Length: 405
Ligand SMILES: NC(=O)c1ccc[n+]([C@@H]2O[C@H](COP(=O)([O-])OP(=O)(O)OC[C@H]3O[C@@H](n4cnc5c(N)ncnc54)[C@H](OP(=O)(O)O)[C@@H]3O)[C@@H](O)[C@H]2O)c1
Image (tube, rainbow, N blue to C red; front, top):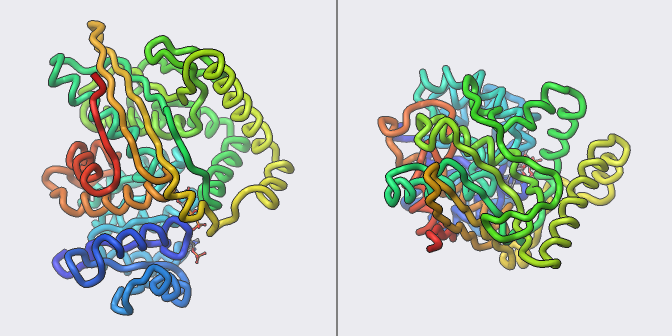
């Protein structure tokens, strides 16, 4: 490992990958404390990205194509950690994550595609354990703030009450930001798979789809507006709950169920109290159902993709990224009825301005966490790096974790 680059950003020519490269360049420079490179399938495009982000000509460029296994193995062999922003992962992701898992290179990504992750866990847990590679999916807005938010709250509960929280509610209070073309492409690829295959639809609805061999109790879920007494707010379904809840349960399982085998967790948007909160919750629930119907139907999905949704390579501009922010409240109860609340806040828009910092710092954090502490395997961010990552993201990535007394 001694002569390897610390980090390679694969997909640097895409919308999110370029932001990751820009962040690493602005924060760590080139030829200084972090040895890094950018990678992609088109060397000319990579050179343009290097110039556009203001990096010097000494920043290494690596040619690798997601459909060329030997180029991926060669790239993985040069790195301690590969960051992949080449999605949809279910279309392009497997050869690289396989090369890392078998070759012993650590890997982080921005995957929010649970059906693919479930397949990769089944296929790659054994080779990753054997090679020592730590594979960590979902290192962006989904699912770091949620995964670490629950971990942070549970840590404090065990300190204060000597017991874990049996029930936690994640409630998104503020989420200012939009989606990129790559994120829409990934969501559409999942919708197509769910419509085609009833088993995929069942797995998508299953909060324990990422904990093979373990099923906990029934978890709350509702597609309509509901008032939540515990947070005194109206609530609506949250679009990313399907991925985050699975990752949170996987963290509990990977850590040996410190929060109990009966742990219950759900995520919703909190829209406020009173008639205004109620009508906002009803509107959000209607929009989510309407979009589900439109996107679930092939011809309307195709029309939206062509004429309304952002294309690959497109996403929110700098002003929108800088205006964005998010805030998530977590409310937990022990089996004895003690209650604890926490809040996680992030600066910048969740999907891009914040995500590019989260994934870059997660990769650097993983490189620092020894293989004795976290051995090879397929991990979640919370189980692999826990409070070490929480502290690092507070210091460097604009996240704030606090207990609300
Ligand atoms: N979890 C989160 O919070 C979060 C946030 C943001 C994004 N994401 C995910 O990140 C992924 C990327 O999103 P995006 O908007 O950045 O997408 P994008 O702009 O379309 O970028 C896709 C990248 O993949 C590359 N690529 C495609 N096929 C390739 C191949 N065969 N070999 C090598 N590279 C290939 C593209 O290279 P070319 O330039 O050569 O075409 C481009 O660099 C999506 O899956 C999205 O869901 C997740």
